[in-house]
Image (cartoon, helix red, strand yellow):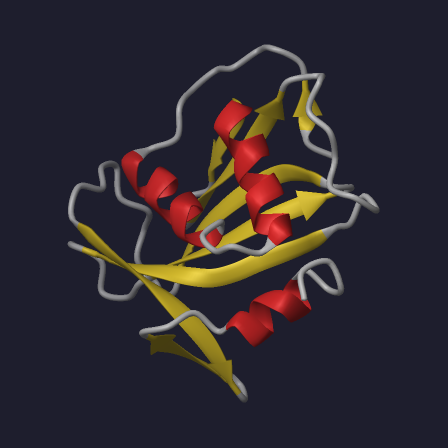
Length: 151
């Protein structure tokens, strides 16, 4: 479950906010409810690994979980970042009906940059064992990810 309480330690970076906006975009009820949680959450903890970052969310105690308390991931957003040979992928973890963690990770052998200023976000789609860019979001894959909650 997402951390609950009131100890916000940091804000999301500009890149993280942009990725969250794309990960939570859409008119599906579950995404709307997650946007409501996101609007009220903060950052409780940030762990930089050298090849990415984990951002743990902090939610107010009065936030309600998604119906059925589901756990799932949404991972169809990536970014090209100036200075990196390969891109950055994002994974949003929802645990027990609450926003839990955003992971940003490098696609290749680069090191996580100290500062990210110029980037371009895009949606991805799985094609067999490959992940490819797509202009439009793969709503079928999103529906499968949130399994049975958004039809």
